View 1 (spheres, one colour):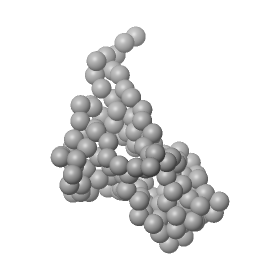
View 2 (cartoon, helix red, strand yellow; view 1 turned 90 degrees about the vertical axis):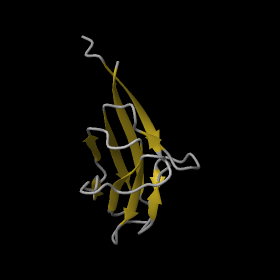
View 3 (cartoon, helix red, strand yellow; view 1 turned 90 degrees about the horizontal axis):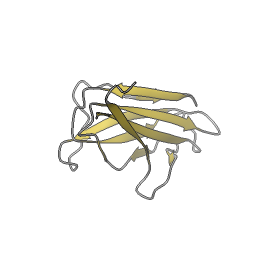
Length: 125
């Protein structure tokens, strides 16, 4: 049964092509941008790993021109990671042309913490 939907899944990496992305201690890390225009909806999947405690705030930043990124008004944080479980959040409708992920380690976050990020874009065929 074809519902007229297709999609792509991309793993988000650092500018140096590293994944999972290190988010040590209280570091603030921003990923390179990725396009979300043309999608009917998209979702973000994250999975943290650590030798100690995980505590990472994950936020979505948006841009219309792929230059000036902001956190959208009244848009909640994506995740407050405190475990090593997979988390997925759907975002619909698509709010901008481009997005990137900002991760901030919180006070109890371990130096070994990494976060794997995947983005799924759903499109009509």
